[in-house]
Amino acid sequence: MTTRLFLLVLLFGVGGGVGLILGAKPLWGSTLATILAEPDSALAQLVWSWRLPRVITALCVGACLGAAGAVFQGIFRNPLAEPYLLGSASGAALGAALVLLLPAFMPTVFALPVAAFAGAWGATWLVITLANVAGVREGGGLLLAGVALAAVLSAAKNLLMIAASDESVTLKSVLAWTLGGIQTPDWSAVPAMMILTLVAVVGCVRLGHGLDVLGLGDEVATTHGIAVARFRALAALAGAFATALAVAWGGVVGFIGLMAPHCMRWWIGPTHRLLILTSALAGAGAVAAFDGLARYVLPPSEIPLGLLTALVGGPFFLFVLAREARR
Amino acid sequence: MIAVQAARIAVARGRSHLLTGVDLTVRCGEFLALVGPNGAGKSTFLRTCAGVIAPTSGTLELFGRCLADWPRHELAQAIGYLPQEPQCHWPFTVQHLITLGQHRGLGHLGRSPTIDLALVQQMQIQPLLHRRITTLSGGERARVFLTAALAGHPRLLLADEPAASLDPAQQIRMLTTIRKQTPQVTIIAVLHDLNLACRFADRIAVLVQGQCVYIDTPQAFQASTIAVSAFGIGFSSGMVGGHQVLVPTEIIE
Image 1: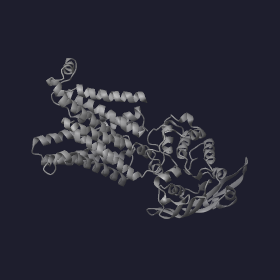
Image 2 (image 1 turned 90 degrees about the vertical axis):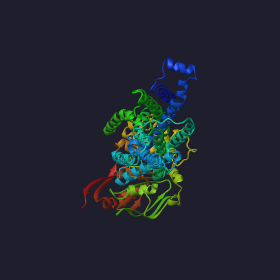
Image 3 (image 1 turned 30 degrees about the vertical axis):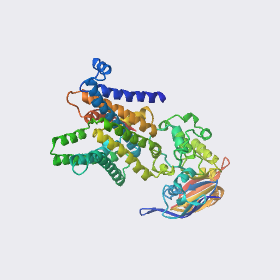
Image 4 (image 1 turned 45 degrees about the vertical axis):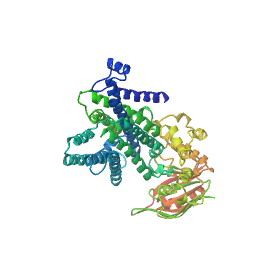
């Protein structure tokens, strides 16, 4: 187990490293040597002020998505649940788009994360309520509700974009969100970003014991002293918070929240405390590497990150679906 | 001392009345078997005692304290609940499942990571500790979930058909193990097999249509005609290998 955790941290580092090296101009061979030799060169400055903050953002986005996916899977006792498929990510994107397109009403700096959080929480709450009313707390029905809700929310957001956009810049940034794309923040924003990610991941990890007990069924969880409905709402809140952070910094990136917990459950084990922590690490490494790839493949343009993760994640989802059906 | 004191407990869900007024007293340290036809409300009564569903009327006292007055975490420590078909949605190891049982009702600080080895030895599941739940046989699974319910030393064990879907040897083994927990643990178990109930329980309570219609020792139960009227079927009884047994005969319309 210790070896596996060590390997995981190594993979996390490798993911970050790949993100740092890959890009429109890959940093290998002589280029890397130059940068290391001359920290004051223009190229080194470029890496320092552009690529490094972007890689850190990618790591934060991935950590939030991995943790949120593990929490949602625990809440719904369904290995196919994740922020993208449940509609939480679309809710966050709708909230964020509202703020971006109507900046007159609220200052973006504060309003953006808050609106994204409100959207994510609202969408998650709606899916839980819908599933409860329809009596499908477990299984495929829940995901169908989530996918339908995601479609409605995306449509609402796209409609809003078309109706409200007059500056091309704003429209472009909204579009980047829809397809997923890591933003490059100013260095001054990086510490706050890292702290928020840490808060989200730790908050999710602390739910681990309750999620384990929830896996024994609602009745038994009640006899274990857990107020099931309240705990589920609290856990959904934590999941929505992590999702909102990821969407605010990286747009709607699908399937990371599905793949990371799934691989970790298989590799490390299903105990939620460890699962959430390792899923955050794995998600972070994966998003950083994918983001590097997105910048590297077709220079000078950049492939939207969400397309890349969907290309890998879609087939993975089908694979998991087939395995679940056989059980 | 009284473990469970139920007075006119009624439970309704929508228009259906699951319990219509159960009066029942369970003494501390005894093994009470709940028997009765399907749909009589046995599982509902057990769930009510476990605090999973709240009674619509009547009073329920556990160890002299009204159920509603129990703080959630204290109730969790006092009761071990074994449902009819225990679920485990994730492939936990046996060790983790038992640890979860041991941590019932405890806060972050009270949770010790070491497992109760004495209990594990008594249940004979040491070789299974590192196996995943999904890889166990039916009998092993039943023993593991019983261990999880008993972990953390509850005062009351509520078991819903602990012997169902087990082969005869596993049934006897399971009930012998449960029986051994008395008198430290009070036991209420729903049993469908009347002969198992007579062999292992101290007293037998009969539930019919949401009410407790009879409660007495196995000997008195066998001597009475309550089984015939409760189940609507005739019984022949006799001694086989030192055990008094009941064999169902013809259905009485």
